[in-house]
Length: 396
Image (cartoon, rainbow, N blue to C red; front, side, top):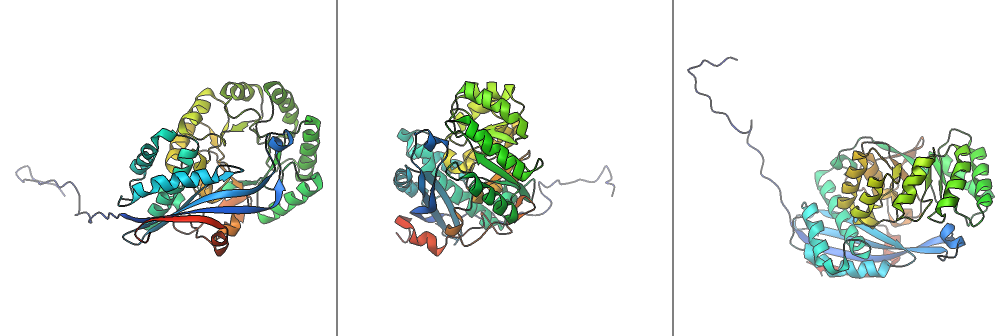
């Protein structure tokens, strides 16, 4: 349609009137400390070198947030061996800051919670206490939108490559490891990660050789030294491991040795993965800027939740790194699906008893569930394992 020069035209800022924006307010926050027992003690290289005791249970902090409009969100953080009660105690002190707030303001609320406990710093216990609350806010936002969290964030894929770790610990004899490999593969897992870092590297090499022979050449295989090599050992063992076509070597050095990891990444053809132990955006930024790894491995509960995780992912993407988040597949499936580059998710079946839902595996990949938010609800077993709880706001 043409408009005559003499006609006056009124331009409107939108084609049709927008609907009224929906806001809501946080009515209550429930926190729970839950101790998850493992079926049997497990050991990695940190145990064999005498730095830690075998892992027998994991402490979880759950946060359940409810709004005046009846919307709910579920989030969690965790700690292994020590720290669970500390995370719970810190979360109890800062959780009241959320009452009356708009749950959509995830970035502002994360900053508010950090400042509420400013003297505790911006890493470690302080942010791990915040993480459960932040993840619950993101879950609530996605549930209210009626979308899986991955879709709310902007998914790049509907499924993610998945590898199993829980079947390859050093406390397991190689026969049991090979049986676990078959079970994981039959369940639909794509890759296998094997723990290494024994005091005698020849033991590690024999185990890697056995698993690679059992899998064949084409199945993705990773190894994880859990920070127990020095630079010389990591270089020498890494050169031998080149023969096994590994997808990556994980945590060959101390988690904070950015320079050493960068040198190793430049020396070896096998990709380097690290980052799971870091607890802040700044720490991850230092490793990313130094070129310390090919696979970045942030852990959302450890770095303070989804809000800081997304900042780390943006830095990693900018530098062209692949992503392989640590543990808690129930959260990291969504975050890996929303990452634009190569991404993996780590399979641990340990947390399954705490939820009523299960994640689907097919052809080596984990499927984004067709449920809103994280797609999780707490089971009766989680309630039975709860040792402490507290409620803030209405219903307290």
